Length: 198
Image 1 (spheres, rainbow, N blue to C red):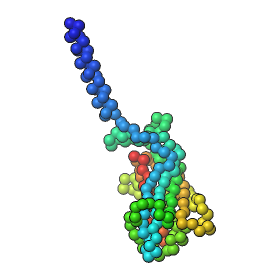
Image 2 (image 1 turned 90 degrees about the horizontal axis):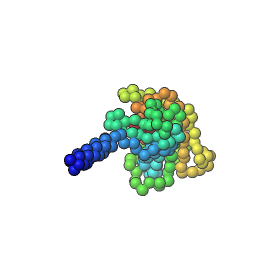
Image 3 (image 1 turned 180 degrees about the vertical axis):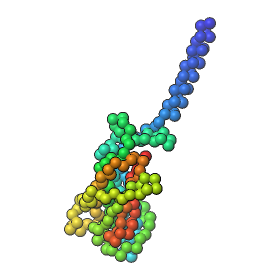
Image 4 (image 1 turned 60 degrees about the vertical axis):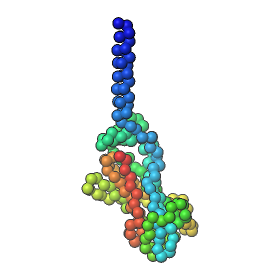
């Protein structure tokens, strides 16, 4: 009788163990905590006719996102802040930091080529930016609060310029997607970098 009871107890423990293991496998899986500086991408292009290589590098600066975690639940993915609450909206204030460089900062060669009559140094100083928010099929433009050149002053010759585009996103649902577009001085698109949280 005791042996039978021990066997049943053992089987029960095994079943419970398998059940807990299955539940753990199927539980939402958090990703490592986010950083306040998130890479947005890069583009390397060849400017013609100057044959100069232009690198554009995007970074998102948002201290509010430090430590937040994406939790994957299939189509019901969510973003959880460090205090455990679910984030429903984009952080209201954040910045896109765009580095435009004529230095050879990437081992990869140019991905694309573009006709650009502007002097490459002048191009670096006169880049334009446009920010758009996508909500399903709806698109709206967000006017930046400010666009500033940081680092080396514009009147000092240099082959790299860094811009900070400061955004007030208002009440933007976390399911939306933001895109910063980098334009030439004449408004021709050079590239774009996305910012999405889910």
